[in-house]
Image 1 (cartoon, rainbow, N blue to C red):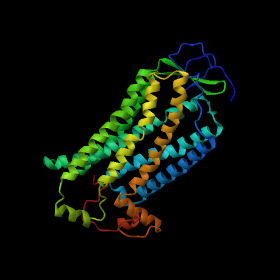
Image 2 (spheres, rainbow, N blue to C red):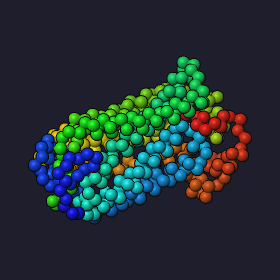
Image 3 (cartoon, helix red, strand yellow):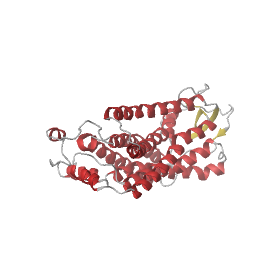
Length: 360
């Protein structure tokens, strides 16, 4: 990488700066940001993570978009949204991480380093809020039935679509607020003689971490507890159970143990990474001694965060409907009602409502 001097302040991307004379509250240039542990072993792990995460999520997405029974469910549309977010980790995040470990330093410039270093925030935001949406969809229908409220399918579809619009608008608002609050200069050495400088918002970053991860993760765990208590104490009537068994074209909700695993993994595995970024944002660890042990922990927390993107699809495959679809795909998509293709399902007469997203 060539050494260029950029005296101007950062306005949209990180700029390389080698004159450390400007004022800054945090200085990471005293500790070179480099991988921790065996470079070859870490690179091999990153490559395996890339293949594992990409393959698992691509297969899950393939099942969701080709199987009408799976696609005909609002719950599974949210799972599709979750899988696309995790697939991004496999195709973007892990290859760059493997390159980082192989080379021993970041060689792609400050702008790409900023994207790579902060990409975890929007991805974690999308996955945690996807699980939160699934749990809300699990809690609301029993409440409506208890109070005799009837919501038409059209209204459900409109609210469901609006929830995604609100979710993405919320993400854009958070990013905009963080960008507007950057005032402190931070210097990060990414290679020998290569220092990146950026404007950041240390106090704002703590608030962003709370909104992006800590708050939705806590709400997910709370709603999971509510769902578990309700479903463990509720007895299913024979008529409802008979309807669930006879309606083979109706995708059922995720079993409680599968939903619990997805919620716990999504809520807890990002915790180490966000705790470290929060500590760094507060400026509580800017000395050489502190960074010497905190940055290696950051590498470990990244691996834990990556593991979530590969484990969750495997957990989803434990659900009966998904397990049946997987078996159908592995057996060359045999045309049976539980793993058929679109053209076969379209020819089946079903007296029930076949409107897309007709079920929660």
